[in-house]
Amino acid sequence: MNLKFRQITFEDKFSGILGLVIGCVFIGGGFLVNNQITKERATLKQTQGTVVDSLRRRERDSKDKQKETYAPVVEFLAKGDRIRFTGDYRSYRSSNGKIVAVRYDPQRPKTTARVVDSYEGLIPWISFGMGGLSLISGLRQISPIYLSSSDE
Image 1 (cartoon, helix red, strand yellow):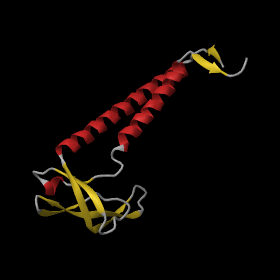
Image 2 (cartoon, helix red, strand yellow):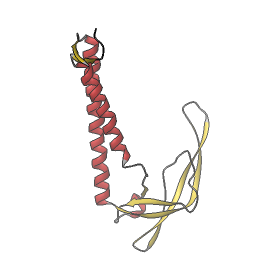
Image 3 (tube, rainbow, N blue to C red):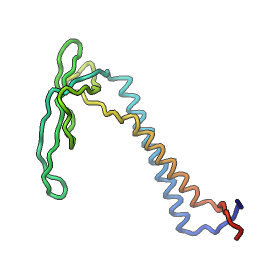
């Protein structure tokens, strides 16, 4: 392995700076999402709910093709009261009896309840990873030094 120097072109500088900017945006977005999740976990109450029904909706996508989406009707207990709410519409149907995590504001459980996605905690880490890779790629583009494995 030998250290070599190379000429940096305008395209190298441009793509390197673009990679650095995109990396910073991804990392900043990861921090924002992580802070939002942390705030929700600290201020909202989390409990278990049960899917008791599903609502079906037909809609057209961007290609004017008809598709069906489903929203779970979830029931949970808040201060001894049974609360029912409708979750977000998705392309798949949740089976009745399925146990889901529910997060809600104890002051207004009916209007603030939502189903917690199981992959919610992964989103900031995926953003950090993509941002880190973009930063490394951008730094590599603007660096005048590179490693060579051959004796050129």
